[in-house]
Image 1 (cartoon, rainbow, N blue to C red):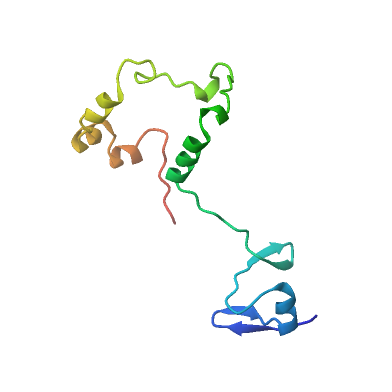
Image 2: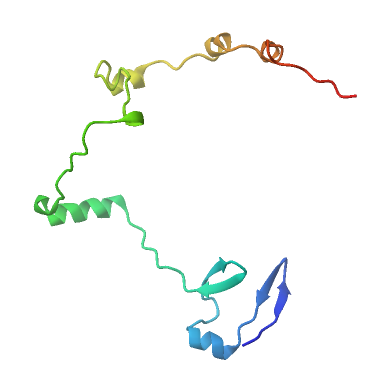
Length: 131
């Protein structure tokens, strides 16, 4: 079946014949997903999405009970970037210690950083002149 593409505002649109829309179960206001595959366009019904709330998931876990809980899997020791070696991970400080710590002042941060001028004239950087 051949149809024409026509301008619709700043977009272009395809008008579907009634027989094609009825055969696909489409009515006015129906939503479809447009899928581009190479140089082809395909219209598909959208994949149904059911939003879950955390409260509902936890309630379902409680309803099923601990006998339906999956067993824990031992994946072995941490490797590479999984290893975090800091005071919190070693147990030297707690989360409360981190939260209660005063944020670093802006002037202290600025004192520790090189100024923009010093950075621009740093050794190894060259300025190029146009013309």
